[in-house]
Image (cartoon, rainbow, N blue to C red; front, side):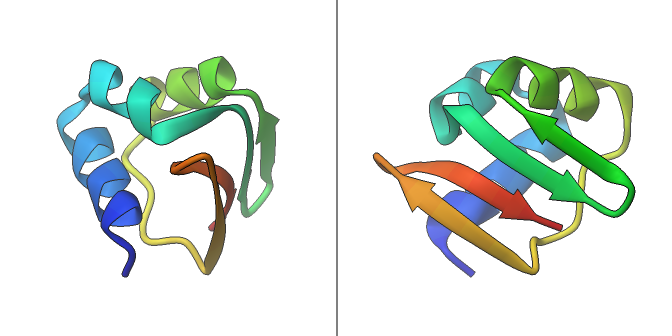
Length: 71
């Protein structure tokens, strides 16, 4: 697993919004079963309201941040 993915999972698990803002691209595409979100702020709201996700099936990095997350 990529270091950045591991850091996202750890930050989401502890509710560390400041760390997530650094790790997630502003124009993030986030896909989970029955959930598609676009934009870092929407994903941060989802992570604050629900349990942390499991590792993604696939992901894409852009500028050293998570740009696509396919759960």
